Length: 186
Ligand code: S6P
Ligand code: ZN
Image (cartoon, rainbow, N blue to C red; front, side, top):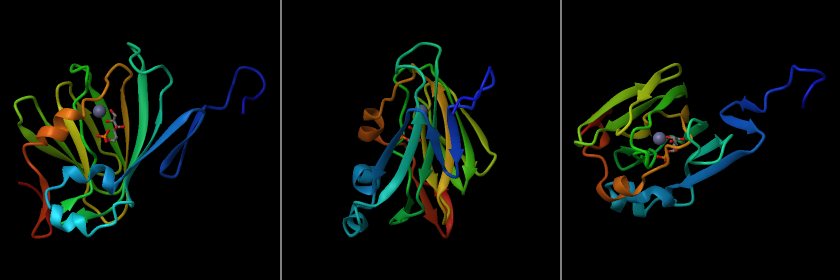
């Protein structure tokens, strides 16, 4: 792809809702992979566990754990609900607690749910063009509240790491549910 001389083609490309190029790492979470995060297990038991809940394409230009580097990822969450809870990401704290992250909305409608170390929960609307600074020591999870895929980008430090265990065990202190047709933290 490189041209002649000093001006080169970039190594990464946005194509629609995906990231493509050199060494892009795709990953898929099926509903079965994340079903434990939802409250309504009875409704869940009747659903197709093989369906994709969300997928992520990431670029890791340096090895995981490198100080000072950056990673980039595009997440695409399918529309859907388990009972009255929207399809959402697993959510995590960073393993290296002081590391922050940017999220920004690209397509669709979502809610970014945040929780600090005192289990205080708050949330921000996501939409094309919304930009979200997630400070260190704040857990983050995104729900798709619309009827089309929710696409957002993320940029985070290469030494952030992921602590999924704590959220898997204790969840967030509030759940985002559809109440009277509106997304509501309960
Ligand atoms: C990584 C960044 C995102 C998420 C992705 C899926 O720090 O926050 O790329 O990995 O949105 O969410 P989760 O909680 O399943 O990793
Ligand atoms: Zn993160």
